[in-house]
Image (cartoon, rainbow, N blue to C red; front, side, top):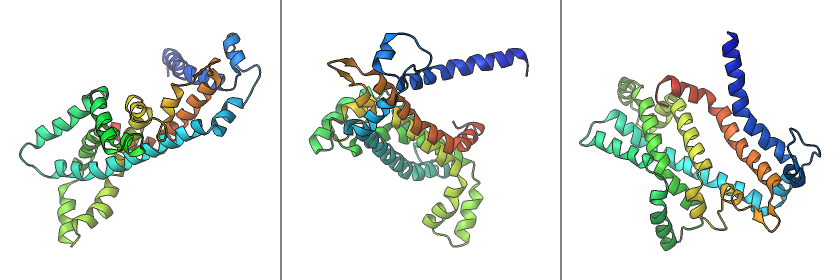
Length: 266
């Protein structure tokens, strides 16, 4: 590798990792040190910011709420998208291409477009401030992307496998769960990854459709202003802990995501 490529790679890594390092650096400082001047490492190392998050119910319940509706969203997305994608990949019917395109147009729309209808609907039927409310709102955006990704993986599976399974006496449910799904596990991993990432970082819907019981960590982080000002140390610690689940998910599905890129469906 030439010197220019090495230099470019180093500059890129510094550019990408510097904000993360700075966030981690701030999380171990006191507010006085953060506001007092520029320091590249903590002069008075402290875990108080993390202790605050793990002992304050409003903070750690924010993480519990976020994880809860993210998992619900992932489960619903996969349960709906798997049979839908199979239908698009295996059958031809009137308007199939138009329906497939219409699904993707939902994903193209900004969340703000659906904010008022969701708020009014959930307030009327008693779903406001629940984990299910946020999960269902996120499904409107994650399911179309999931169908599109899974359809690409399923189209790569030969139809002869379906026919052979039916000849051998497999019912559709048995064939789909025991044979077909293991063959597209990479696609399921990619789908779960993108569903998680969208739901985990989305703020507008999650903040508007919750108030107390299901308030996510992203909403709590935007409300850290008190009488003494912004608690920058606690906010930085919360930011570090918010990154951790995404890193773990990327680590577990990294091979599936790489395969998705190789197949040109991601």
